[in-house]
Image (cartoon, rainbow over all chains, first blue to last red; front, side):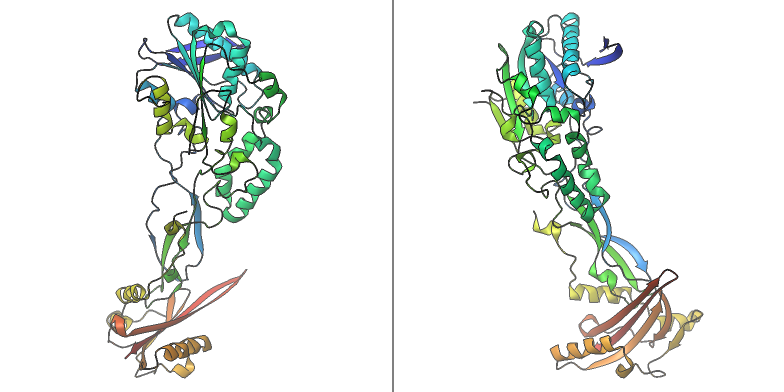
Length: 345
Length: 131
């Protein structure tokens, strides 16, 4: 069911999927620079669903040439793998979901908070029996908390708030944006355009108003405070992997440089290797802050800062984007929603 | 990181020698039937002995190094090919096939010239039987 609504003079659309009306309806809130696809089709956007643990492809025969094959043939990143969105994961268990693209996804949170109030109001009106769960990724968790703080009257049907890799304590990445840019440019020196493909989005996010608003110690976070919303069970998840993709290079085999008694004399073959020092990204970035330190962060948030008040917290060894499709994480959230084993015990 | 994923390109000697043998073409036999392409000088070792003294210095040095590490080896050169930008210009061989892998020795040199108006790759391959 699609519900059109007007917000600040603009017609926007809320997508509500069918499901078991006895179960809560899950409102899906995406993060900074995202849109509805983050929660419904993450392979399309934001992407980053690299298959970084796939076996390397076998050597390739390029054919016979008149000159020796030496050095690098090409650079590339890992291929993409199929992933399951939050909407599909929840639908598989009969949960209805509501998803939409937030206004100002790279701007300040003020308007997205008012928009969420509009969306919740629409859900209360159209589905008056529905209990709600807010499932929020990244900045979506702060959006939810600000909404719950500003609109307590609208929150009466909300049972749970589950945040995925939300920087409740802020992010220090915005504070090191200049150094981060320099580090990524160093990678570009070695690996060329693929480094931009792999990490350019990170710079775009860090440079956005949205991210500056989330800097550790920002006025926004101070005003938001640390009090949990009353009457709502909160759960938080964080990640500690900064591995995104390997930087791979096809290079000529040594035999490609050796002439044989053949016309033409050089038989070119290329083999795929992982580029030393720069791969995998972003493991190879300097540990400027916990957000990009393997074992402590997920590329955009530090696990320690994804905790909120005394909410139960779970840490997974996944990166920020993987929180949009990781199967273990989905199972853990489904357990909170009562769909499998008692995960929190 | 998995060691295999960052492996440097390596080459197993016997595997290369076997590949060398598999890809080998006997141009003497081929061109006796079809005629040698224009610009190719085809000779047999009897007509034009493959004389080590005329080898390029780096090849002579490589050969000397091989002899030092294999002092009992007797080495007889049986085939030679020179290509320019992949096209053969000189081939010296007769109807005999390559030595088997255990007795095959090949040395080669590739020299390249590149400038704004010139790109030339000269490769020379010297094939010997070792006993």
